[in-house]
Structures are given as structure tokens and as C-alpha cells.
Length: 430
Image 1: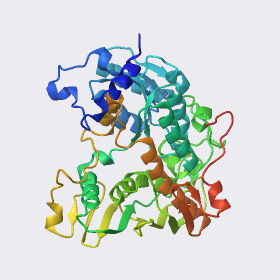
Image 2: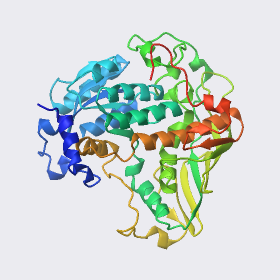
Image 3: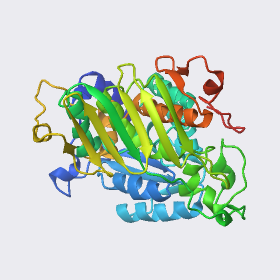
């Protein structure tokens, strides 16, 4: 007998992978149209805190061909609450809880893993799951350029499905914006302006950043994992880990992975990157947070296109020789320099960018079945994260950097090149 995953991969060879971008969900055919067990994707959820439950877990629970069988978190309270939601949805008590993600990965009956942990765990857990033959959907971003390259190469080597989990490519305003630019509706692209929010922990009082006892429900040693040891405080963990360089890249990587992805998409550089970066950042001067709270960056691409990233307000704007297209705020309405651009039709023979209106979770499930790459695969996710990583390096070093996107290294700059990777605390390795 062959495994279900092997069967799916074999059928993909005979043309299934060339199917339409999205397989229609069972709900289209009525509430009673529930796929047979043999056609469901069994899932293990690793990281079931806020976003892991509110977005990722609930999205999979809404798809009839997904079956969550395990939840895992270093906080036992999170596990129990997540299990209750899953069991209530399915009307049984089958969901199993774990405190160690390796036990989830070891289960032979699990097809795919969803990872919603802090950033410093994204790639190590993904790699273990991929090497165990699991398909993976993982929150963005990577922690370093080296990790992203290893992840992308490992996905390709093992032939698994990997989705970088963001919704942007399924959102009509960003998909439409990128298609208009790619099809020349604003002429030759000249500049891209990316607006990100300011912040990054600077409003959290210093007295809340002091060491405190570890809660009995939290396995703090496992939470730290490959990151350097540091004393526990609630302000270090969960949401606010984003503002500490040991675990993330700050507001630049957190929000940049959304808006810069659309910028790269529209610029047709989603598998490459810029050749120079320069700028400055504003950093905390006290407390545990150390990522930039304000970013002012300028990137140049080999084509001459310039991209500016500024904090202070969310927005995205493409400017070309014949006009511009933009939006203000997150998922704000599309604006253009002329009505003709706004109502323009993308003809059949023009570039149609790959999307899935059902979102990244629907797209992932479809691709697990078809064995087609999802709309935000590992290589594109890695390249997008690298744009932010080199921006962080430029702000930290305080100088203009030359970047070779083909070799993925800084040109004649040993200090900058050392920032492409980070040491991992034993016993964790890539």
C-alpha cells in the first residue's frame, strides 16, 4: 500500500498540478458536502496563541477538507483552550495536546504542519517537519538570510509543499495593484513607496520589562529554544517578542513582509532583490527592546527602480512614467492617477498573477492535493524577508550596503556578511 501523500504526488505528475489556481471548497456545494476521510488533509498546529488560533486554526476549521488532530504550544493554557475549540468544532474529543513540537512532527498520521510560533522558531521547526516528509504552512518571516536560503533549498530537495503564511496575495486590492503595474498600466515603473507603522514596544513601560517568575504553565526554556538565554518577563514573550532582535526583526520584518511582498510582486523581482540599500533607523536606548521603532530606507534595483520604506503610516504606492497606483492604510481602496487605469481590464494574453480568493489556508490545502506550488512559496518568502534583513543591517551599521542578490551576499563587506546568520543555542541546529 502507498501513502496518501505519495499517491497525491504521483497524480500531480499526470497533470493535476496544472489545474486552476483554486480548488472550490466543499462549502460551495452545500453544508453537507463533507469530503471523505481519505480526501482530508490532517493537520498538526504548532503554536496556538493569539494569531495561531484566531487566524490559522479557525481558518482551517472552516475548511471541510482539513482535519486538525493535534495542537502544540509551550504554554499549556494555550493548548487546552485550542483543544476545546477543535473538539467543539468536530463534536468529539479526538484532538491531542503536546508541549513539544517534535512529538507532533513524529506522528505518521499527520499530513501537514501549521507553524504559528515566534519568528526565531519558524525555520528550525519547518526544517524538522520537511525532513520528516510533512507539508508546511508557516508564519512569516525568517529570522536570517542564511535560514531562509536553507529553508528554500530544503523544500526543493524534499519536494514538499511550503506556504509562507500571509493573506496579501489573496486580497483584491494588492493583487490588482501588482497586476496593473506588471502589465504596464502606469508605464515604466520608476519608484515604489512603502509605508509601515511606527512603534515596536516603545510604549511599554520599563517597569514591565523587568525579570519576573516564569508562570507554571509556560515551558520558558522551550520558548527560548535556539535564542540566547535571557531572564523571563511577560513583556518579552508572546506578541512583544517582535521588538527583540534575538527573536525577530522588528516592525520592518513584521509589517514589511506584507507590503514589501506586493512591492516585489509588482516590480517582478519576487525571486531576486535590490542591489543597494541605505538609510537610518531610530532605536530604543533602554529596556529589553532593541529593534528599530522608526525606519527610513532607500533601495535600488538593477533596473534602476527605487523603493523607499518609511514608517509613520501604512500605505503602498507605485509610480511610473505614465501614472501611479496606490492605496492608503491596510487594505485601503485602490487609487490611481487616472480613471482609465482604475477600470483597466487585464486581457487574456497579458500577465495574470497567481492568487486564491479563499486565502492562504485554502490555497495551501489545494496545493497539498495538487502538488502545485502555493502562491507564496519558500523561495519567494525568503527573498521578501531578505529585503528587510539587509535593511536592518544597513540601519544597524549606519552605512550604504551593496547587495548581490544572485550570490545573496554583501559586496566586499565582512561585517555586513556576518549579519546574514546568527549562532544558535545548543542543542538546536539547522
